[in-house]
Length: 88
Image (tube, rainbow, N blue to C red; front, side, top):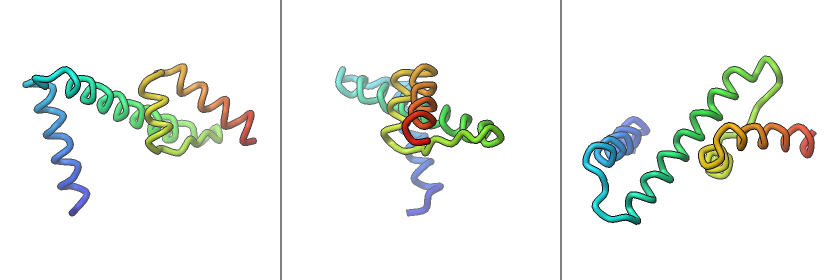
């Protein structure tokens, strides 16, 4: 499948869940987790876009997106610190 089709399907599913809501509690929990992972990926993208001048680059994958999505800005800061202290 084309990436555009996949992103369109995922976007439509997110909009459907946001407007209609999931009728079952586990589906709502999974939907919220999925949205948080997407927000984490967006934060990582913004860090990589604006941090290139400072030498900041955190790879965008499921683990880093989940950490950033669940923990927010402190999680993003922790990833930057871990990268520069441990993987220097």
